Image (tube, rainbow, N blue to C red; front, side, top):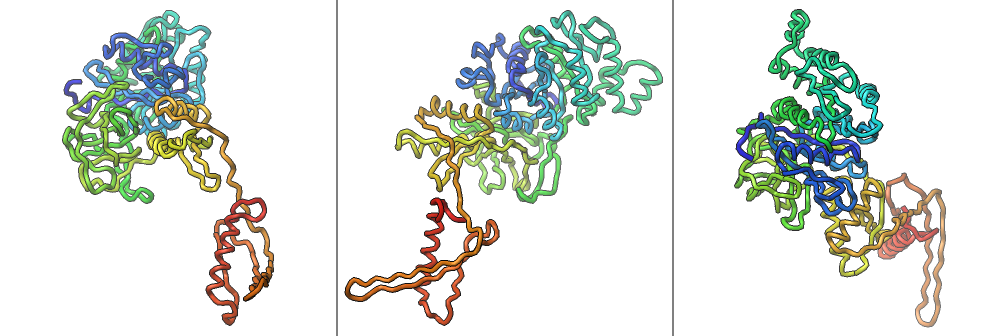
Length: 545
């Protein structure tokens, strides 16, 4: 990529439900923009974004993938995300790195679970939204009903930006066309409704529009269009067929001319202060001359180059040989190489500007959700926390070979660093290692990777339940020990009273012996015995709490 400016950058994520055609859409955009020679196919396993062997085997995306292309002198940085709920963490992380979310809907299936979730999450983070209806050439699609459903679910702000024509083989752009043929709805009426929605954001323009009855020029519409996108007053709807290419040129034009640049989008909320008490909010300034602020939204453990931190630059310029701090760290690291990602390829770059997506490798201090900066003035700065679904599905795993046990634990920690929705737990009570994910598909993908990439032979079982015993009522006990077998005899007598404390209060040992009747050294042994009995359990062998 040649030299560019922040105003010529676009950061965009493809989000939506599984099988909506996001990866195929990314291929079509890359091919139409000339970034690749021809469009690959998911079923053939030759797409740029689904390059992982597991993705080829499963036939759908498992990870967020980054690609880039140029169109009309604009550089578009695109993130293709998985759509199935088990891998929602990848899509949620991507929303922290982009100014625009393209919410892709399968024209045959309509609005699905992840469609609604991504619309809600993007709105909550102030990410501009555009709805892309894909597969418009498919059989048995009812586009008018789908548009009506979209407006019913997401509001009247959802406005047509183009319309399908000739049975989905072509698309008519509406912003610059007042007439034409379409498969449904009047082009003139849709054009008028779109202009009406946009000019509402500019009082002077609205007054002229109503008085003169003339359409504003594209230049006059640009600022109110961006304002409407930022506020959610406008959510454009576009139609494409990623397989035939219908609507792809119009979508490329919209990304270049209408999608917000980093200077036009809603800046993400950063907070100044300690992580759990940060209250001073501020917006990053997309000025390449300011101090660097970048946010790490993805971690990858690459088998060839090691740990990779993938980030969005929000402020300042990152160059080769830059000195950067990680979070509140006191020692900087020197940037040896910076990369742009094109699927599985790491392309070296000289500089990264605000709005750029890039990567650095072999910096062990980098963690998911950390902030990179170049001045101690930016210490204690954090992005608004991302909200991820909790990993509830559990599976106990065991290495078949004892020699692999330590290696398994180390690899699991790497996977945990990569995926904010994946957890590794070590249960001392049951002596089990338990992995937790969003669902069965999520865990199956992790197990497949452990077997194929790391050559680990594993057994899996449902996790044992770590039961606990508890004292529910007060009780007293008495024990006498007497032994006479020649020589000095043994005699001891112990009386104990137990009673429940508040849940979570732990264990409290109270010595109520008076007058030193029992020496202190014996009391320590009594307490030790009580603690051992609590650990061993009384009723069924489970720890007493």
